[in-house]
Image (tube, rainbow, N blue to C red; front, side, top):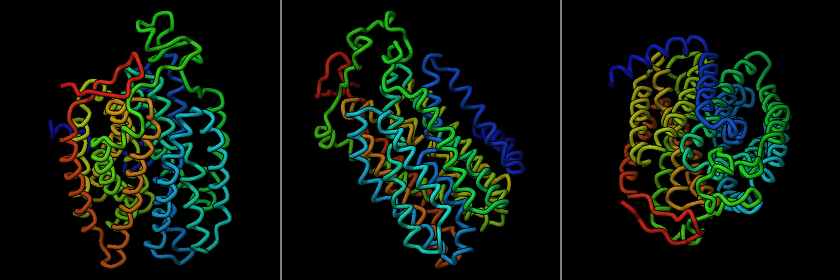
Length: 463
């Protein structure tokens, strides 16, 4: 099985490395296929969530930062550590907004939070056109990204999908959150082309135009907080065919939000274990993804080819989220996550040995598969272990742990490079952290039994 997977990755790697647009086309094809597996009445909503993730503040930070690094540092004379300090400055805003945005989502619904946040995010990104060589201005802009764009984060889209789906929740989460990978597969080569032809300022303006001209209109048209607003039940089932009317409620009433309260969740040991797992995973994945293009150029690849590898990683992120979502509906989620962590260990080791060309693309694919699975698994674990009653707040806190790790992860590689001129030590550290996270996943235990008929706050474990 292992050699077959390696052979498939090698066959995919060559055209991806040669033509950066191949991953983007394949990512769209994969997304279309996954959407086709969902009920027809739910596809517009899931497609909207995919688009929202593709243009979210997280996608912008994750996939645009590496592309803009070289031209901005060269123009302004900044070091790589100075540049990536901006990423660390997104952490306070993310942590600050996590409980607040979760509370707003749980209280007011997704639509009322997402639409104004899209406008604010577009305004901030578009204003980057006027960026000067002032680090203070640059840092201030990045510090505002997670605040003004908080409503576009995965917390909003995961909350939406968790409400709309039950039996196909894993697959739908995988499809919706795969939008991050689609954003990477499209944004990386597009932004690199814009940087090469028109400069980095055009790249920021293009992102703002995409938010205002595509994402916002689609969200206005298709985003609905509950399936009942369209006359259907969870999983796209018509209300008159729903077998469990107590769980579904009537067309003008929301689905009962069962599970733990936020205070009970905070007292639950699993919550803190999951937080530690995703803090570690965020550090390792963030470090690899943010620094992928600099690592590849250090290994001897051209910037345009390195952007193509980043696009391939985005494609793998799409596949990882879709495939992991399919598995989550059928298998024990921690085991699914542990299996996916084998890929980035191998990918980090390959990059540490100087991989370039097709080998670098294989490494990017392996890293992308795990990056795709991790947030999907997080969204699924929150629903299964803690329920929907305080879903957005619980997810928001855990996502803040992931974001904290992903913010500090790239700084490790940047500092090591500035001091030693190499990335090998950082890459080996990332590989070790993936193994540590896998060990922590093993101890999560069985899913609790959350009553779906009445809003209980107690949950008992089942084997």
